[in-house]
Image (cartoon, one colour):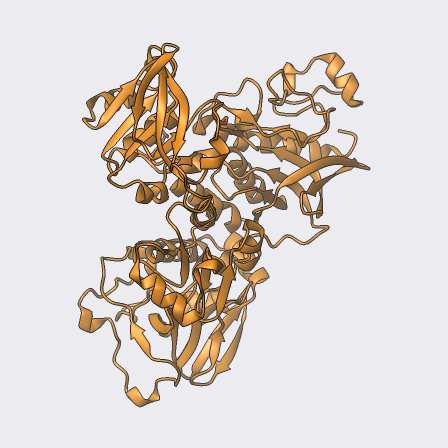
Length: 604
């Protein structure tokens, strides 16, 4: 994705450039307005809020001289499209002369969202990741542009820390600004309680793809946009991308393919495959890639894992005001890719096999990947509620995370949180700012047994939060007589102390209960405990090693499973502390064991 805000260069170079706030300064002066490229009407980006300081940068002459070593200069004519909507793996570009305008298509019209003058560069995270570009870059004035091929750009990010920091800060700031400013290059149209709409928006959110959701039942713009594109309600949910991209009722695989979220080819090889892009997997990816190992990181949903659904983590070291799970995942994902790790989702692991002295990891879609070592960081998933009709309401009132997307859905409504861990507490605190009332249901008599004290006190002091100890959901109620399309959760019946309790009109229920490891895809030889968590290091019994065929003259290292050079970190590992910081620590530390085993050769 690209096409975020840019501004004319300041009088000095090598400094960050602020967006002008006055509306009449949004459009730069043109020597000849008639020289603007022909095409559909172009609207300017209206002044909204103050963009972040890192959103733009003008390279100095010395910095440009360093950049030239990584690319080649090409001359472009006025009106030439240098960046085309829908492209992938585009070059990193720096304007040397002339002017490059960036615009996106919103609701049938082209809207200019930025312009680059000498010393400035277009683009956002898609330049780094190779994902689909959602904007167009056209030369408003003829000039020269430095093109840095993607493989050279990856090398630049590793070799030159100063230049790397400039690009990474700007790309990250532009994507965040696109999200905050309501960038409508991607539009999702569908009903509020449609589970497919929720799945689509969840995937886009996990990958930091700014989008606008139009409720087909309440947003008048939805009807006009659909009419203009020749769409009907039967086509929904619909995802619109730019001027021509239309996806009717896309599944997650089609959406991932369309936006280039999984670009791994069949047969891809690496030193290390990391399965799972939660905190532990991302930490392992960062440290392995930064130490020179080639890394493939896979996830079924997107970066962040279970922690990515946390609205605010307040006890994570280094963030005194707290950090959202999404922000933490975005930063870690960006950091890993900066060092060369390739992240792919939705890529679901289906089987792990020995292949001579290496490993073959097979994906659910049939692709086979090869690696010398494997780090399993699949984490633990929230357990599903043992109550009738759960599947009927999943995505239509039953949810497993509390993020801004869920908060938008349940604004001014009563909600129920089920669980007594920190994730439940964080979700309740966050949703209390959006919902009219938050009911917290848990089986224990004392919530302090499982929840941090600061969160318990926060809940007790929040007036619209109601605690329900020794309480669970007994039944889920939907719309009487509704067909499948119109059915949704409208309330719950509770049980307290084993007896029928209150009936709550809570059309939104958030489940944060228990933890089930995602390990069923692994062979039986990879030892687990009675609950399915992976055993590592000293937790492995000699008999388990014998059954697994362990033949090395050493014992497994701290995070090594019963198969050599197959490791487990984070929540998926038996005996691990189920905290974000613990998973990050294990993911970081395991890389030293991987290095040691790989350098010792296949026999180790």
